[in-house]
Image 1: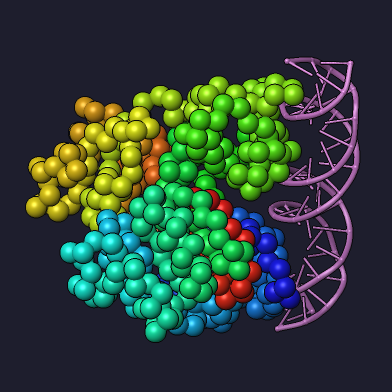
Image 2 (image 1 turned 90 degrees about the vertical axis):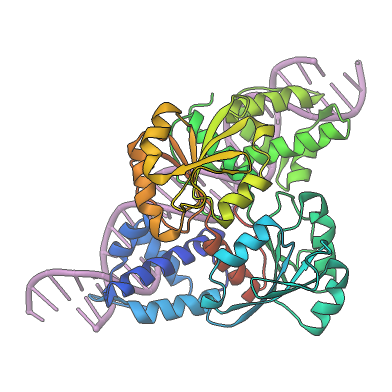
Length: 215
Length: 215
DNA sequence: TAGATTGTTAATCGATTAACAATC
DNA sequence: TAGATTGTTAATCGATTAACAATC
């Protein structure tokens, strides 16, 4: 099991977890693949197929124990372990993410921020110490992180990302609309607002929906 | 042609356009499917297959004229026409989007903002007049929009979205991590930060990349 | 036990890739 | 003309759906 979950399966994992969380908060204890499928808008067959990539978490005639399954899913996604994060670019979007995302809730500690703005460097934003981007190598050397959130300007994106990869940052969460050319060992997840808006516009103009690709 | 482009094809359209824009800014005039493929990381076959859903824009032995093709793509996506946008929720993320996205550049006019915060209502944020969410129906009735950007709190998301659909908003760009249950005629594009972070974490922990699903 | 529901194998469907005739 | 490259048809590959034996 596990060897190679398709990207489609991986993209659905967070949906499964979220749906289990909701059920749990309603006090539900068990759930069937059919119920999960209805809640996230897929088929029972696909739900079972997805889970089966990683193992067997259900029981015939019963379904899935919600606590058990959500523990397993968290483990599969790796969000049961703590992660250290730095935010590179503390402008509007960077700051909004710091405010808005409940990083601590899911075990992500934001341990440093970087910016080019002298009026920010040395200060704290949302409790996060801000350093100069010039000091990235040094700060991250003393204080390794798993993930860098890339929220710099589009013009700086490629160069900064390259630098991050070079100093050994394993994963980059890219909010710039830029395609980053990084060594293949660097894990990248892109959130591209512009592409998303254009796709929305396409479906608006062709007025037929398609309910996106997550993100 | 056109009838039914797959969601995969539609998701690639913005990539094609962006790549053409870059070539154009370098003064390049023509391009082959092979070159496009290399630039966006796919195959020449797929590029031609994608275009062929909508028509024939190239010439044998020559390739594609960049100006012509990008005009066609803009038309296909509908971004050659002006669009009217409202932003619902002017907190951190909403405000960051207003600052950061070059809406006007692509023909999107942000004509109104809505919030629950009394200290914002009646003011302007980034040049956009802010109204009370209570006045959504009235304001949008006098001033129809094509797209609402949903950047309200997660707890308000479902209800506000329902209301927007009810007053006839054709498309919602959803930045809340909530799954919106909307009538199927409402076009939705989701940007789900949490899902994206979890998928990133998955690939980080399984250290093998997959270079996302756009978004 | 009877009913429900899993995990998995097989069938179908759709998307990507390969190949090539047409032709600029 | 010879070389390049399209648009499209056919072949392959992969993902989703259906079916069902196993069993709680």
